[in-house]
Image (cartoon, rainbow, N blue to C red; front, side, top):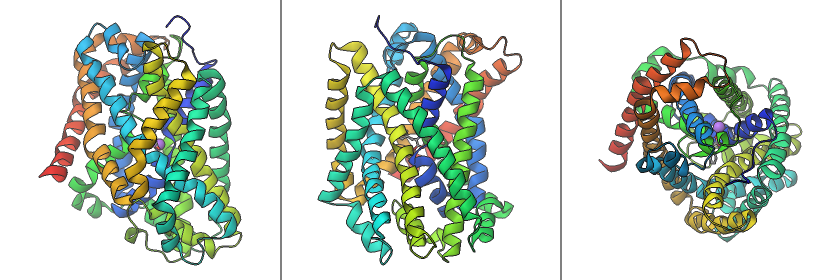
Length: 436
Ligand code: PHE
Ligand code: NA
């Protein structure tokens, strides 16, 4: 504990948190959950969910982490509420669960970078995806991705995560802006934008009950909430950081990257007359978007850049999750960081094996994460920070801000009522569709 590391700079924390947030959630899931849930109508619910539910919940995680400077489990002991350690445990479990298949998708991405350079999937994208996404080679690719993640986390907070994400996050932003500009030149650009961005009010209302749980689950996933990540990352920052501002920067940046992803993907699809609504599921990005590259000018280059961005984004998210588990173990056992990172990596590899061998398993893991574990984990957090900590949480949030004004009580009551109701509703609908 005494030699616990910290971020070298405030920007270090921000960039690492953005690196965690921006990931496959923005690039792989967001465009296609949008497509399969009614286009722009989904975007509206998603934005509301991010702002009204995700942002307040993120601040709740920050309060716990910075108040205690402990790992996500022992933080609750320090706060004097030992039994609420369940939040940290559930968060770690949820994160571990999600990372197990996230690594598998990371492995696909590595192979798609190589495949793009060779034009390997241009002739028959669906068959190529089938071959890459499951089987012994997918297991190898999963191990390769995981090996990179373990290597970065083994180096520690300052030398590993902070240095790596300071390179990765700006690269993602620059490359995505470049691709989005390039996408404006495609024939399908206009149709793509309007599909993505012009909401149809009737469609919104007709599908509200189906779409809301997806939108809320997506908000948690994309902001890296409910996985003890933001508790852990904020445990390495100082009392002079302004938490609402930091949270705002993270939420806005993450949302902009999601929107940029849509501005790239939908023009590519419409340029190739691919109906986005037809391509759901884990293969969506890989089959539909990838099949667009084959017929585009400079398709190989664009493919390498595109999947290169996806890889960087996935890596910077995966390291945040591994760090959560390593931080907990590192605070509690006298085992070196590199050994812990490697050992936990092996555990993740084993849990990911079913997903690497069969995409149906991957979908099953993903569905349980969205519909059950993420909302459950956030539910406990919100009850604890909103109703148990209450005023103390507002006091911690105030540190470093020079005064919150009305934002303090507004945040607390949003957490207590709006977030709580939103999470309960999501959980109820999720449980109903999973089990009933
Ligand atoms: N926020 C991440 C994303 O959008 C989700 C995530 C983070 C998943 C860390 C796994 C590990 O991709
Ligand atoms: Na994200």
